[in-house]
Length: 151
Image (tube, rainbow, N blue to C red; front, side):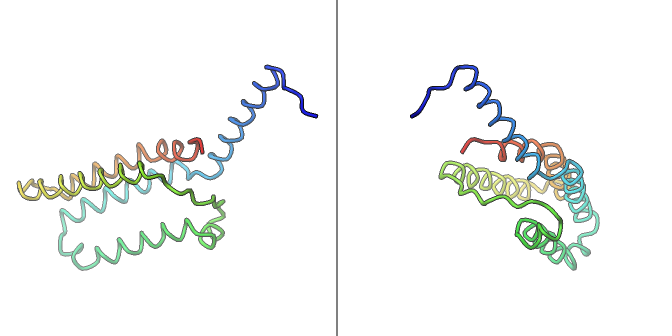
């Protein structure tokens, strides 16, 4: 025995679904301070790479590997439990998003190669500053978009 809901009941149910999706996204997202700190780290790394290339040649790879390992650990059950963060199930990306990601990555690599060929001064500092500002400003927006997208 099934009954058809009234328009008011259907509207309330859809609002409830939207509210719960927003609650889930808020619980699984990182704070704005995390995005700001990540942006500052990227900008600082770019400036240090530009000003002190010997330091980056000596310790740069180690710093990048440690930051990548910390980021990967934060997205595992063990790391999330250590940081007391909820872990969400891994979503399988669709083919179009993978193609767009590959296109953006190819454009970034081509732009970096072109800027290097033109011998642009302070290239590392510019890449670090632009990347850091982009990460700090657009990171929370992008994460909210990814967490609230429809299935």
